[in-house]
Length: 257
Image (cartoon, rainbow, N blue to C red; front, side):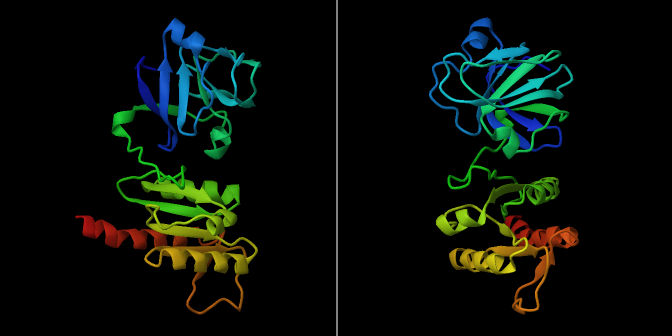
């Protein structure tokens, strides 16, 4: 891995962004200091210590996720939510990435994943204030409304492989927050086993943003589904779901040209 200084963006080898702004600490004093003196580490920020294979959190004021990376840029160890006054190490690591607690789980970073670095200047880091998970791309942004992490992971992979940015919320967040000022192209609602809840979220979304394309999936369909609503099978019609979102994006891309 090259010794680039400054601030980099951490992403998985498949292109998915894990952290927009990672400070590189490749000098002795920088490595020793690390995150000491900081009161918080916001989501989207981190620090990488290189070279390093161990860290301590003495005198820190908050927990962190710790990612150990080998010479081949493969994640060989993760410590989730490491608390203050603890230590962690991993034999074979060449650098250590410190992230806000919960970020590894949030973005599905796991042992065995290969990571890559990019100069922050080539990454668009515009983030919607109400939805820190959303990242603007040259194509579109889709909000997934779901509490099913497996579904989120699969849908995110399929969308991000098409250069579509993805954010996610739960149904309760949709009821308590406004989507009025969020830069979105489409919304994907996972009704799960409760189609009624999904339809209520659909109505709330349409009331706030009637111009948005809304796609809804459920684990089972119902004869009581309104004729005007197309409900896709959650696990058996993912290709059709992605195609519906692509169709929502197409007119915007034509206009942009």
